[in-house]
Length: 143
Image (cartoon, rainbow, N blue to C red; front, side, top):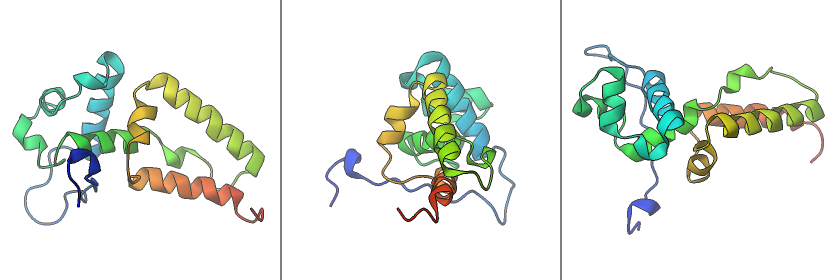
C-alpha cells in the first residue's frame, strides 16, 4: 500500500469526450501553457492557479482536465516530445543518432524535462507511442 504521495501511481485519465458540454480547453493547450511557464521561470513556478490563468480559465475548472499537479506534470512530460515527428521507418543507426540528438535538444530547451520524466512511473500515451516507434527501428536486429 502506498504510504505517501511519492508512492502513488498517477494514471492519466482519458481525454474528456462524449456527452455534455464540449471541453473548452485541450490537454495539449494546458500542457503547452505549463511548459511555457516552466521554460521561462522553472518548474517551481508551475501551479494549477498559474496554468489556469495562462489559458484564461478559473483554477477550479482546470481540475476538470487534470486531477492534481502530479498529473499536470505527467501531461507536461507527455507533450514535451513529438513522437509523430519521427519517420515510420529509418535505418537503426541513423535512428539512434537522431533520437540522441533530439533528446539532447529536448533537455537543452526544457531543462526541467529530464528530472520530471525520470520520476514518472508510467509513460503517457504520446511517450508510449514514441517508445514503440523507437523500438520499431531496432526490430529485426536480433537483439
